[in-house]
Image 1: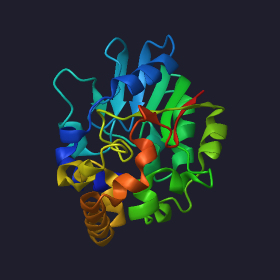
Image 2: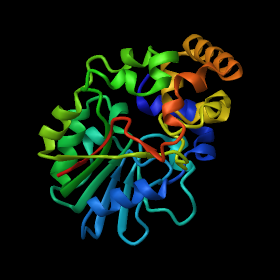
Image 3: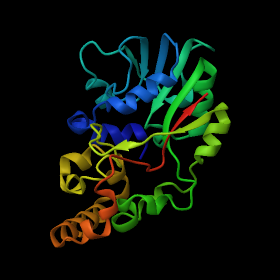
Image 4: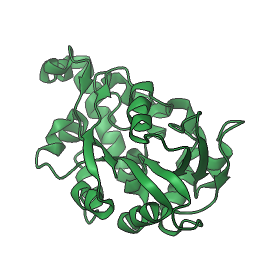
Length: 248
């Protein structure tokens, strides 16, 4: 299933749980520097688009484009791998939590580099051998996530493609944007189907893996096993779960 088909299927309720997290937005916008014209690639419903700059969005899914709010930046139906813009058309190009959906991430990043003088990408580092154990949801309940990454370019390869440096992005305990790692200190949220429907991972692993994970998590929350196993998280204000900002 392509990313367009995926979001045409699961994207109808995306805005219920997926909103801009101000602390992450501040880091992304700082990385944009003084860029006034910004291309948002894989823009979805428009989260993290800076309101004080001239933004153009690119989004292949019609379902996602339809959910962009009134007054949002103009949105072009296109893919990252074939951006319909001239070389160096923008001061900056940004991509937020989308590279892992592209059919050819390296080609998409090269296109961003071609059309913009600065590139900012919010992505995930899975090259650390301990990444799978860093987040309890993948470690204890959803090991199938590892299979989704087979054959995908590492964050190091992505950074090298655009000549980027890397910054860690911490996930606050009360993160407003309901992406996969957002509820690391609020485990009961993953029992909510509305929450899961806003996270593409659940659709990708399939219903059997999803229901197995939800059943096991519900059981462990009720028994107190989850709290005992993860008690070191309960006082943390933010967690380092492998999220990265690439800045070139």
